[in-house]
Length: 134
Image (tube, rainbow, N blue to C red):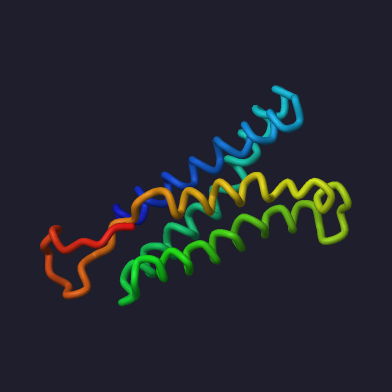
């Protein structure tokens, strides 16, 4: 579980910190940085817990690391979009016109693929030398 937490916290914090920077820079407003940083952090805690549990289970599957990351990416995209959908609704023009969720989703997906995920060996041995990372 420790490896799942380490991995998920890396890409989660990457997205939670980078998204407000992108929003502030692209909208030329430093005030937006703090607002989106605080609310992005608060609204994404539950998603982080869920994606950590998902990663913990996916790491056990006998799949290639890239396949595992694809599955994690799909869950992460859903967990990123759902809070925005629940907050703004399906017909909110402000959300659909600005695509605010993409500011979080893009760094999230990049983080999943940039940071290395430790995978337990497929032969269930305790040796760390056989660990696969991507």
